[in-house]
Image (cartoon, rainbow, N blue to C red; front, side, top):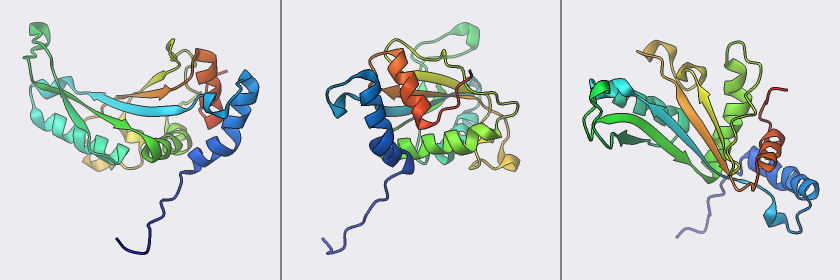
Length: 188
């Protein structure tokens, strides 16, 4: 092992969370310990590609785009059972997904909030009703072209995706305050 250690730069969103957001949340919700403050656990990106049942190249293209967006290789999801109305047999590739954790998660969220969302046409904020009982937030994006990593000329078909943000929050209110403090632009 070399004498030099590689120092990884801490994402600015994580640094802001540690220095300002977590102490504010502890104070606001009356927690006795800083470790009780809600925090992010993972971000899951999912792209359903139903046309992949007929053409495998569509799934491969979606996987390549997802890899550019997430900065990590996606997993190809396959159908669990046959559905004749959708012309799907068991085991066919029908989507791609990526789970981001730690630094990659914070880097992606930072890009999503500060770069991608302002590029959405007629953007008025995201819906605050996307929280579940466990404090996780789910939202949908209509096309992958809003990400700057995707080259407009190379896209053969526009594809939507789901973004699920998982937190350790105990309630919807805690999760809402956490994401709002991180900079999520919620509708009023």
